[in-house]
Length: 497
Image (cartoon, rainbow, N blue to C red; front, side, top):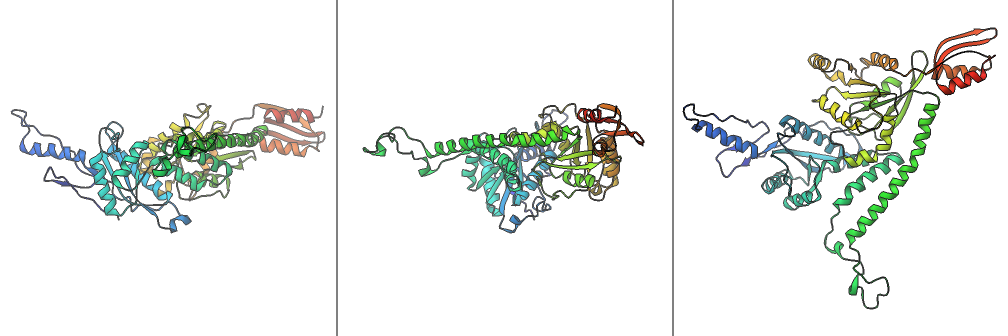
């Protein structure tokens, strides 16, 4: 259970706690415009509410979103810290962001003990929360017996070091948590390389040397009079050596990822060669993309109630009602403020989205703020080339967790969206029909009579084209169909004159 931490304001007689402290209006005496005694107290209370730490309740009681072996060991006990201002967000949005951070921390293997928000104009340049609030947070950490602080923002290296020095515990930011989850869930060789690249790019400007680690290697006279050629000079500090090693590893990883690109291009080329329509399934993390693909294709792709359970691109094919084949591409989930390093590292994976014929945008309808998730995904999609002209289908998944009032509100806000449940199959058939209607039409219409020994070509027409007529006659098989360029050339080549 999350415990409340009472903040004793020494310069006043009032104690405040909780996340629902009221912002009262200042009442003025109507005769002279001077604040009355009551309004002065209310004005003072408002000032206090701006300065206090707001505890976000219920974080420790959140449902565990990860069910993996590492949760059997002792978990890190963490306290979450966030800063919000009226310029960037509302209090409810800040609390929702902190709850999302709690889910991320739990997925990474942490035990969330408490979470606090500070209302200020902008984060403190030195310690992110200010020296006074840093001391208060240190008290919360001591009370909760926590060993880590997780900040709901990207910290500068100097801010992290200063906050660690004041609180005497480890401090990590939002990006570090997301990178840790990616490192745990990556399985393929390419996925592991992409995650390692993102981690090293994040780590490089944050290296910190301690004590003997700052000593130089065999430099100047310290190397000894008889040290010999090559041992004199300023030398290289250990932190400089670490940076050089990391830069070398980054360059090597980039070459490895670049060398993996042809394999993906070969697979995409095979789909294009047969005119196989491709549907990219995108959405917020844990929105149910893999579950939806399983429902639509009958496959058994990994499904787990965890954030970022899918990191490696998976392709699953199925057939339309008339036998035409098409494929779904499962992609990595997005999240608000997705680290830049990850976007760059996974750019090769996101190429699948830009090459798709149709986008299916999956949203968790049961989430407290699905519109914010939609905006976060659209923000990432805008950075992908050739995506503006690709048609999209919006799918509100997990509708089985919504009551009638929620369904009505979602339908009013998104009248063209499909309300479905991957769990019980509600709305799946309607969605499948809508997707198949939007599949691109093959560009070439052919009419030909094929010999009876071209059964394999007829099968390709059924699978990758749209046959209008297949008539078995005495002189051969008369085919009228829409196909792609390559298949049309094969039909012309084998046709009976």
